[in-house]
Amino acid sequence: MEDESGKSIPGSTEFSGHSSWDTDYFFSNDRERNILSEFGWNLQRDTVVRDLETGGSFSAFDQIELDQRSDLAGSFSSGSHQVIVSSGSASIDNKSPGGGDAASSPSNQPSMSSSSSEEQPENSTGSDGKLPKIASKGTKKGQKRIRQPRFAFMTKSEVDHLEDGYRWRKYGQKAVKNSPFPRGYYRCTNSKCTVKKRVERSSEDPSIVITTYEGQHCHHTVGFPIGGFIPHESAFAARFADSTSTNIYYPRVQFPLGGSLHHVSQLQSQGPYQVRPELTQRPPPQNNEGLLGDIVPSGMRS
DNA sequence: CGTTTTTGACCGGCGC
DNA sequence: GCGCCGGTCAAAAACG
Image 1: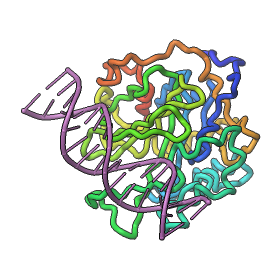
Image 2: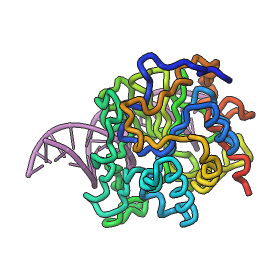
Image 3: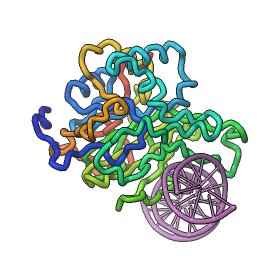
């Protein structure tokens, strides 16, 4: 468990290449993982979690949750609530066009990292740009799509598509600028579910897989009866609000500490963790393999 | 034969 | 206004 003990990635493996991520939280320590595990997110030691909250998504949550988030934000960033609440004003893209590209606003783009060479590996540039030709998705003209909460997981793994208890169907793949690795786009196979996820490898550390989830499942996992998926913001906020005494998370936007923002030290630890290829297809009967399969929040199901 | 993956085209946002 | 780029579509191929 104490794999990362002291190990620091030589090349400082950080999220450098992902400066555009609307990141709010970034977990990289055992302690942080422990907290997550209390949610039922039994993350592998090689996993780092990031909450890619977006401004637009807040409209989907209660005010209470917002408040809690504010508290949370203030606890570590001296009241820079915007960091959390609006994801560093990263993307309130459900506003009018032009104003929505807040994500690209210079203010929230600290030195970010050494190699900002990589542009938006995550899109966030507010260019969610989709609006499928088939306007069946309820994306009417004038009202942009509200981006769902996003969470990214960095995992050291040989396989790209990590098992998470849900069934996904790939609907696209694109080459990532400045990265030799393509990015895969997946959608939950449940027709009623709009959750999507992107999978890509870190161009800096090919052994790391970055999985970004967007949205919340409206159904249970296939292999995990305890259903639920990404805990609601409220859960997050509440939990963290409780442990404000410790620096559980780091608001990237608030820590322009020259690239050293987040060292995913544990990532470089060669934990025995690895997902078998077969598992990528079918959810395992038990929740010990999956990266997110364990994510099924235990207390979620109320 | 039903489902998933592959892959090129297309769309819309954004920067220049 | 144009080109770039991320994200999505959809037809065909692949798979089990």
